[in-house]
Image (cartoon, rainbow, N blue to C red; front, top):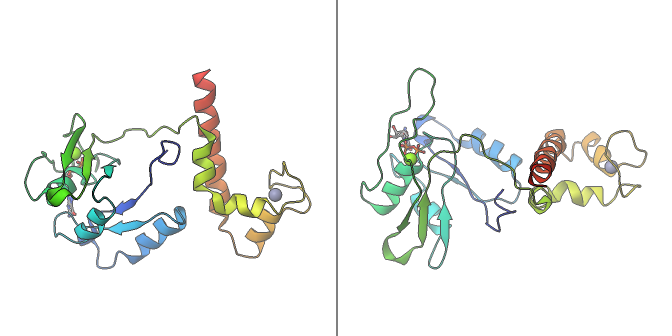
Length: 195
Ligand SMILES: Nc1nc2c(ncn2[C@@H]2O[C@H](COP(=O)(O)OP(=O)(O)O)[C@@H](O)[C@H]2O)c(=O)[nH]1
Ligand SMILES: [Mg+2]
Ligand SMILES: [Zn+2]
């Protein structure tokens, strides 16, 4: 989504104060999105706020997207150093956030450190119809695919498949190929709906 929209994605793992060691979760994020910066934060305790602000900077605009309840508005408040956005407890019953933030709002960070948009939670992030987004997110798979014998290789049962060879050699996580297929399907669906 971010790549198709011309944005540079940054993954934020918030609420790191809730675990003794956030490293295993960070490792999962790094594997899911190779090459994408990952920032660990605790909006509550103040961890990682400088690292997050460093992803913005003068002349840049960021937008926080993610499920309701993950702490987007709390992060905005922590970065601004004031309680500008209302935040809400997660419902204990189903662990879901309430949609406390109901509209988008743009804030200027102190010291000209960039602009940040707080958004209501996304109930269902939709893939862009633009195939460039999927290509950007799976450059590692496509690089391997360039070595397949057939240029239209589906990486299923074709001989000379460099992607399956890399999976067999433990060089590519099979989940990467699965995720690519899933997102490609969603992207095609989005493209078909637009026609
Ligand atoms: N433990 C912990 N709770 C947090 C943190 N950031 C936000 N929260 C809590 O998570 C709940 C949802 O936060 P909110 O900012 O409203 O989430 P939003 O829906 O993504 O804007 C609130 O109860 C916050 O106090 C954090 O870093 N650590
Ligand atoms: Mg909010
Ligand atoms: Zn192949």
